[in-house]
Length: 204
Image (tube, rainbow, N blue to C red; front, side, top):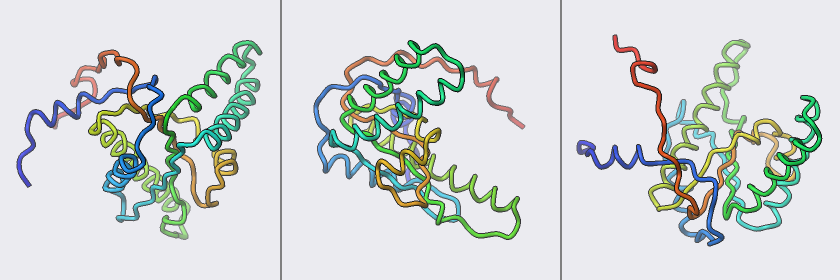
């Protein structure tokens, strides 16, 4: 394998989160290529525990949007937030799902986990499989970026896994971890502000 060039590093550093999209649909073949590239991510034990639910039609997106908004309302109510603010946030949550040309729900398939007698090892295995699924999420976003599209990583499904699984009819072993909104950007993302490297890295 050849040495990576500076331009490739520039490409990796140029990815940004995009939250506003043009209404233009994403071609099915293009989406398939993106998802296939995502599956080339590394994984612990090579278990490849990532699972994707790709939503492009209005009906499944509507079901997901309503379910997440309902869970969001319950969570915010329990936190004691004012009713008007709860409704504003829940409405915004629904609109984000409905307005995205593509919504990809990332799951971790718990059936891929190794079975251990030790509770400690069972917890470690769950962490490893969750990390592996997350790596596929990053790979997905880089594949999206390579095609000139934009995406944003959203964590809401992890707060309502049962609701997401139910409304989308996902297998019982699929544990929702995140969702990605994908489409052609309709905004110019702000420059990324990074912490200085000496605050995040220790060289030894």
